[in-house]
Length: 296
Image 1 (cartoon, one colour):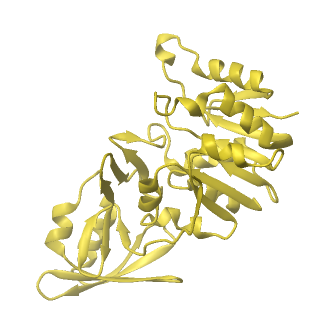
Image 2: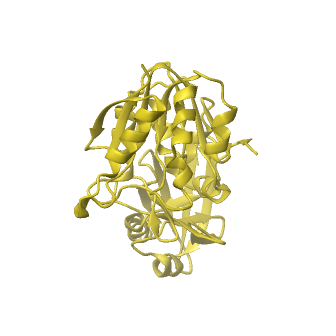
């Protein structure tokens, strides 16, 4: 059953590995460290007993933390985002029936989401923010449009859409743990924007409840095809996407290129299904690794 989530960030200081190093260096004499999405700075002050004080003072998010420099150094690693708040220091992860983790990419860009060791963003030859910019550009997001973002993940495409002027974005996520992990990721905090609605649901079911011709744009960025994600690549689902799109609406469908080295043409197979659903496929975007289609 679909549930519209009251999205609220969890304020904590998130540190990528290079930021941990900066904090350790600044702890000697005090100073500031640029962190998170580069839009805020953490104040660092040395304390007695090899401890350091970290503070973040942003609108709606004030955090103070007092942590051991030894603990910081002991937890640092190339594939970890550390979280600090109060006297607690931990890793941005959720362990359950599956293993979810925020994984740093490159300085200046956002983390990727990793589930059971599989990245949910392109990290080879790209990074999550550049990848997101390509996708929203191919979807022709502009001022005033209404957008359905079928697979939220960490919310980067939904956020990029409102930053490009979208009037309303509905973003759908099937996994509650993914939503919870996004709440500690500073790069996801803009999901609290009142133009964005976060819906916890299976999008293949949720889309059936939407009115026909109600969206100008659809961004469909599913995980790679498996038995679990297969319905996201089905003809029935594509027909529903066609139904809920307005005439002259634009769909961007990330496909990737699985099997390309062995001669497979996965985007071509998807393009054929989209045509059967009613779409006119305009092109395959090499930079965004996906198909652009329109509803005439």
